[in-house]
Length: 472
Image 1: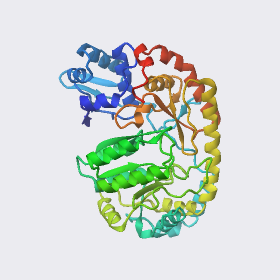
Image 2: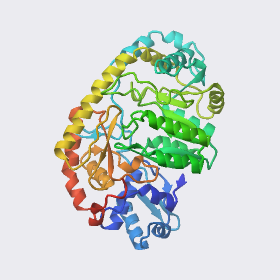
Image 3: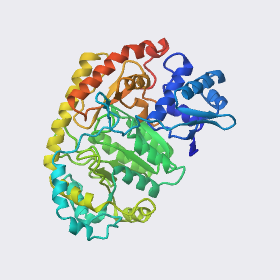
């Protein structure tokens, strides 16, 4: 047994689980989804029936029935005297490539590799003798790549020296390194909700207590809540994705940036700005000025969304003192970024205008295909227009995202429920639909959602269907 989840934490993660009857099966489905998208890892001990019943305001018999359903479906194992633990789930873990001819995996919001990447790799391979002559252990990254990243930021209005860049094995590694370096257990971190879930996991893993600030497709960032969060909790860090935010696709206005910067300064909070989606413009200029360009922030970036998710190159852009601390903290985790990939990334950065033009075309086709299909087949849903990014944050006409995702899985369409992106387990009225897959796959996926939605809705409790003030 590797870990344990408390009743309080499980209740928060479940969010809007009680959307249908019977209650025990709705609870079981909520836990199933947490297992399927790895919010509860395999071999995690679940709370005792009595503890979870008290936390959720249910009878113990209801929780016992839910656990029995989970045992029957192979999601948990219960041992008398030892409690219940979650089991590894074969088949559809997040991140696995769909292998069935009719399967559509939209859990990952990354497009296929940029078509020119293979040629760049071939060119680099021809100089393999030079690459393998290097030591291969460099926790800061190659000077050539750090210089290319510095030039990248300079072109976006953030003058940068190579010494202000540290290369990592992807943006997730960068976030993890910053969390481990800058946080102590119990520190508060201000974070958007909804947000990139793996960032929240990295921050929690470092012992942070997360303070959510709402962001929506229609209204943007809730500046009042942000100001309250900074003033009342004095967070050590704030993690933000200000350009084509994942999952909402919203970008911060100049007013929002200025207000966030001001309140963060007053609270003594370090801002971490995630730039991983910032270049994914569709309807706007392909080369954008960087958000918070005039404010001293720590920046995280990568080539995962723009070039290929398998090119594990990311970076941190910050002052030299911070990067020295990060470099000193890195060896227990890894001893540097692979040399071959760094040379490939250096070559790709020199061709970014070409990369971004191709990406804009692919994302435009996907976005327009999803939006058109949704408006035709599910006109009761609210479909936002986004000028860039990787996904639509669609508002359903009932808070049934969890049930919809489970129903779609039965038909070979794999999505993540809205609660996956929440800090506090809510957002079950929303569904993230990435538009990074081929248009034909996206249209088939929407057709599947339209086919199963009436049954999902029919199984919901009337009180849930009538409420619009929860889980939004």
